[in-house]
Image (cartoon, rainbow, N blue to C red; front, side, top):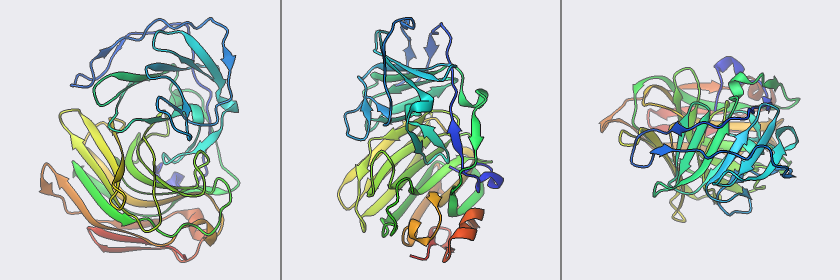
Length: 369
């Protein structure tokens, strides 16, 4: 996601030095059908357990792109830069040094340790409350608890500029939406970037965040060349924040020319956003429910091309047109007024960029490819 507009040109490297005391609290999640009072068991913080190097996101699902942990696990970030993992009874399983974990570029606009990124099953509900996150499956069973004993924004996190750029490359945005409950967009998977250098990550998405650019963003994301996947197109539903955990629906693989639909829908029943990315060509989809954006008023909406470590035109994909976009508030159509923007580093390093605002429901993001 974007930071403030003045921050978009900065390459951000988040070196997380987080949390840890010797108490565990009992916390209630939001009161809905799927979020009841969840009780965290006493955690065995003193046991000597195995140190692991975490190079993939921690996840309660089985997939080659994650480090699988058992459903019901508890992830505990400590103030001395450790991430400790417990089973659902509070028994310690292993721990990791955040600084030694793989650093993964995220669609939240920052690079995070793999210990702070989590894939969750389709239709999961993720409830963020203070420094704790509870994830339930579609039946309401608690499958993951995350305790950030010292949230990133209070941790003295060091932010550094990278020697190569990452930022929003080009985007169209309406930054003055009083209320919005639905945002749909269609687009085709474009030609992939000619370059296959590692870490040159690309994200394309339609998204919503609170006015001013934070603290979270909901976005159905088309992904290229993530370090935990590879040099091919993938897609996932994201509920992301630069200041904490990322909620990511189970990832799907897509191909050039596939027709995608990104849907963002606010539910008053759950007080959550439903994030869905569907491949209409293959019939597969990725979904997640999240309250990382906590309401449906005073919002920004956009379609975006984001890139990491790009330095020339070979690092960006072909043109992408977001079309037949739908904007509604409680069933009534919302008229959008888009403006075009370009990243400052992108303007220096890339040619052929052009945000073509065809209408309030049709925007093309052009590149030299």
